[in-house]
Length: 88
Image 1 (tube, helix red, strand yellow):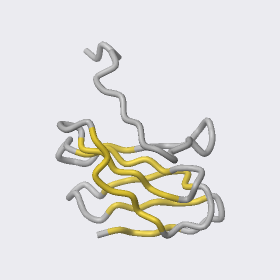
Image 2 (cartoon, one colour; image 1 turned 90 degrees about the horizontal axis):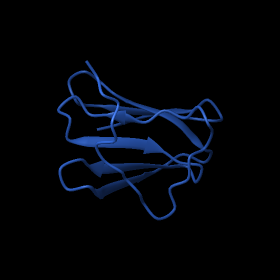
Image 3 (cartoon, one colour; image 1 turned 135 degrees about the vertical axis):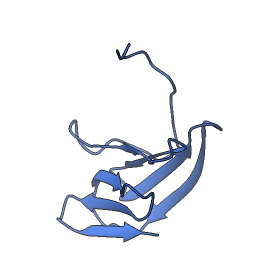
């Protein structure tokens, strides 16, 4: 049964949640968290290191959601303008 306890907190300079229904995701290997931001970036954190490991910059609008494939690649992100990018 899930306890719903906080297991980690991730922050990055510039990262701002775009909406109250934005969706982040955890990689299939449970090593990374990806989240979109109002600044159009996708931020990626290492869960074991609790540190930012990458910033993906391509969107020109707020990124609302991210999702990894079940195999771990690619990562997909979608923005407020309906543009979806895949990242390998």
